[in-house]
Image (cartoon, rainbow, N blue to C red; front, side, top):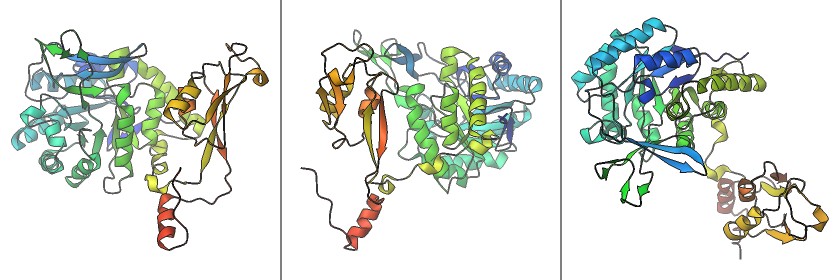
Length: 436
């Protein structure tokens, strides 16, 4: 059985699944419940000078009957005193010595950073996470994403923290930035032990068309909030991989953003994460989702022959490259399994109106009657010679594996755009003619 335990920048955890800093990690009571359910670690809700939250705080994007595809919040850091939070962290560590407990911090001055770093170590926290990502409320006070969006400022503050730090320091990065790699490099230069990403994305999820006020609202006014949940996963994966692939960063990564299943977890691990933080899915389904995560990830690693999480981490990082290195002569075409085709013709509509007009509607008689098909109603047929392999038809098809993408041998040597430019410059080939 694969070893799920990790050593993340010196922070040991029985598995890679951590509760991310947020409402589910706000109290000792919740921490006990999380660890009882099987979570390996927890990042405490951000501690700083107590704030006053508003009511209401959350809104969501629902899609196709699925609730909370995207989740938005205007909630700030902990509204409880530092004394209470540090006391409860000690209580949790005393009861769960083998689980990771990380103190998330956000203060303003060098002296306050030194104070809170020391208090975190004194209460027994295994590490510190610096919240440089909150995109609302705190950034107006010169903290949160106001720090994370400026690598020079982030580097300065991480430097302050490292002056006093005796336990590992994780820098939590904001996605509300042109290139997150620059912030990651700044954290590395300042001496950080690890990074975590992504924090929430600036957002407005919807507008109430009766009141013309976005949700959530507070006495008729709203505010931009932090977006998270399944909808942000592609953005998070991209940023995690970018940091993992950058030779100047070279730090352990705690992946955050839309993780809700073992499959999500495996994708983050493959692209360079070592620990995994989850918040929105817990708010939606509760702490016990970690049971399936642990079991599913363990089974997957066993099936693929990996001995541990560490062995698997980063396995897919090198399969990402710049577009210029992709093979222009590689070809795939769409194939339709008529035993599965239900005759909805969504593939035809998508190709005709949104892609390359290479699917025709033809007489269904030669193809038999598939499930749900109506006699005499035409069926889609791919003109393979014109198919560009864009994948759109297979994506819109509602039947699993009805349309598959099949590799074709073009008989041409591999050539990327970079190769093409080099050969063109050397006069070894003529410019590729444009499509008519």
